[in-house]
Length: 308
Image (tube, rainbow, N blue to C red):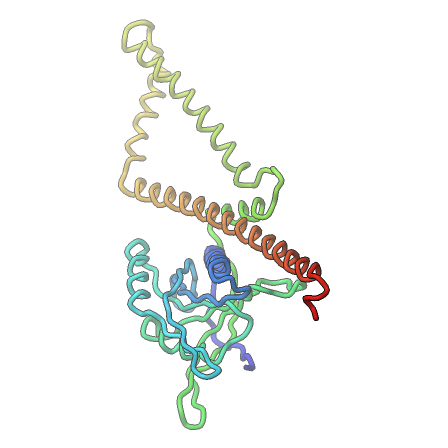
């Protein structure tokens, strides 16, 4: 199928979390199905502001696959898609269904039918395709994003895919998670990643702050107990510091703090999952190589009469 480039002014931003999710989905499918290149399908969610589209996250889809002649007919479980989408919207109010993804290196005949079945969730969904086996000399991400456009072909309306450009965009938690994965996934050395060098100074600073607060608290207790005479300049500084504390206990601060805390836990969990799936993938590849060599050894060690 010849690819046409979109002439629209749509600006698409892709977050690293989506790429990690698709890679994790593909790795688990390859392990569970024992297939070298299983095809996986999922949904993408994000935000749209005018012509600017950001794809923030993704999740797997439940679907059935039936063979009809040489074609594979894919039917998406729309009830599951709606339920999963609503769960994301409950947490992120501005998120919406942005399109779907699959793995592969070319558009298949039935991809348009799958795309058309999702028009009820978004009138112009995007289609992302990730190639799990890119060429070694490829200098860009093995990802293509397509827009859909309705055209009149032989006096009939027909939906076509148009290749669209995109840019990657990441937030601070995503950058830390990706850096940690690239440093430790598939590596046996003990070099510290930027995540470690970022957290260690914060830990030292918090410990130092705690020690200073203990000293101040001890001083105030001794002054209150009459053990020492209070210095008015120091007491004024303590009073000024104490007056700033209620400003940090507002509902807005607690909400933002809880959101940042949840994002950090999520990225940490994502790093652990991705690292584990990468290790499992390596073990399976090594097992396949060893098992193949063992089969070949058995074949050539058979007695002469077994070949006649």
